[in-house]
Length: 430
RNA sequence: GCCCAGGUAGUGUAGCGGCCUAUCAUGUCGGCCUGUCACGCCGACGACUCGGAUUCGAAUUCCGACCUGGGCGCCA
Image 1: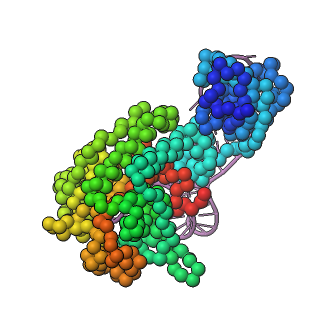
Image 2: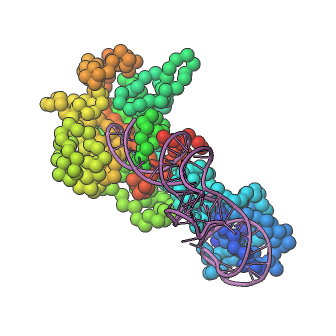
Image 3: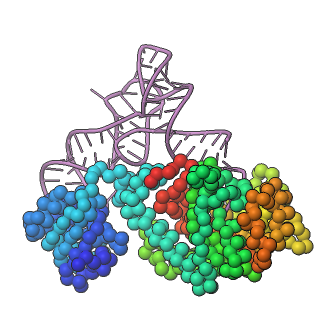
């Protein structure tokens, strides 16, 4: 019976393991092989004069990254990594790896991200790369735990849609039988319709598609959005929820991913403190105006330089609130006392934007006016607008970029590191 | 969409008009080696993205194509 490498301890006596050949060292009369499975690495020591002939011939034949099955005696040896080693009685090559490898799994020689992504299956064999995805899994699990425990209903919404949801970003057109269709940029409209359906608390974690031809370390053309919508909640309520979920994700990783953080050489993962600062947009602009060269004024979008300057000033997660209505989507609720400002927010990490959300307009006629004010045609949104005529609860929500959450949490330099198979301007394979 | 930068063995690099039959590392193959842990030592193998131009001579300069990285705008 095969056991996980992590569970191979000196006291165990005999053990059988299956894994990849991580490294091979032949010292002549003595050979060392490091065998790796998802739980760890163990040294297999082969004293050539003391092992069966079939073990010797298999060891001679085996190559790095081959899959092997080894059984034998576990010995406590201080000189061995982990304080134990396996001396084989049987050694079976389950699947021989060709050489040369397209990528050095042991990382004696670095590889460029592009080369790594071409051979992602090999790249992810590296423990420190695999660690990112174990941590990503823990984050998503934490989000599920938070949302399910609060009575949220998970929904799935169409990714193939007839028209743009928000205007603005470019959509990928696709052929849909005899009709024109697009890949959805956001579940926004569908989440809101489910408020109209009376579900009160919904979420979806799924892909969103943006056809922007950007080529940066923080954009993907297919990203994962954690999308939440809550009835009878103000934007303040959902900001608190967002903050709690981000903190829960950090805490989950800090508490349960010690081994993976270690592999990434992250000694200590600081969990953000609750009470993220709420920075009014107008103050954010003032900070940026003082710190950057390019001119910036009230009413402008917050560009990359401004975002960076403000992030440096605040130094932790924070919200930008009280946005001008003019630069937020049509569905953001204007403030009663000053409709030029709306109840929208962005949630920021010092490095970049992670999430944006708002209290939504739930009054049909106001929504139509706002759509028109953005130069869009309400008729193309009739499927979305109709529910607003038959009793629509007030509601708020947000969308959180999963890859950006992981990227900023782990200090990854490129967002592509946070996705197994990224889709960017140039990459469609694998 | 705009603007930069770059394509040299499987991988990562040096070279940037003649010293290039192209450097180094890693890898692979062969040899020696019983405690390695980036094992060591000896030997071998393996590359200038493609097409055109300039030149006595091009990896090196120019033009074009293809491919790639990054920045900006916008966004999660």
